[in-house]
Image 1: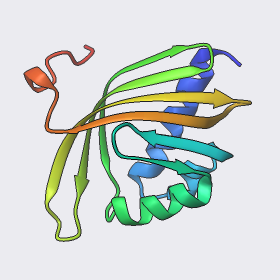
Image 2 (image 1 turned 180 degrees about the vertical axis):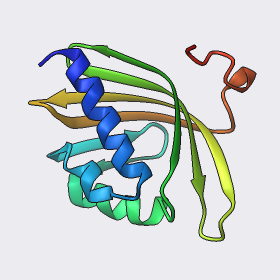
Image 3 (image 1 turned 30 degrees about the vertical axis):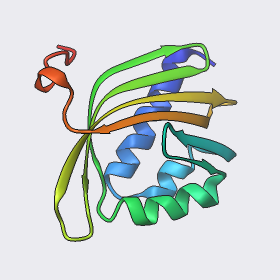
Length: 127
């Protein structure tokens, strides 16, 4: 499957999650998807991801993708994500997600997430 197709799948999945359609997002993942949040935890399978989303995304997150790079079965997204906690306080995080695709679905994620904006306030954002 072409790398451009993988990018389109990730963009479609992220659009679903921004609307709060977590099952729509998960439809783009393999049943055995494995998500590793570097330095934090690893989630194995859709059920674990769904349970994590229920607590981490009290409201749908807002993505600001600065770069989306695809090669082979890998798509890397660099940007910022804004999350609201249970009392409605917004927190911005810089992130780099490295997605691995298998048969047109997201099979694995290595996520590097740090609280705060990207250095330069997003100056590296693609124009």
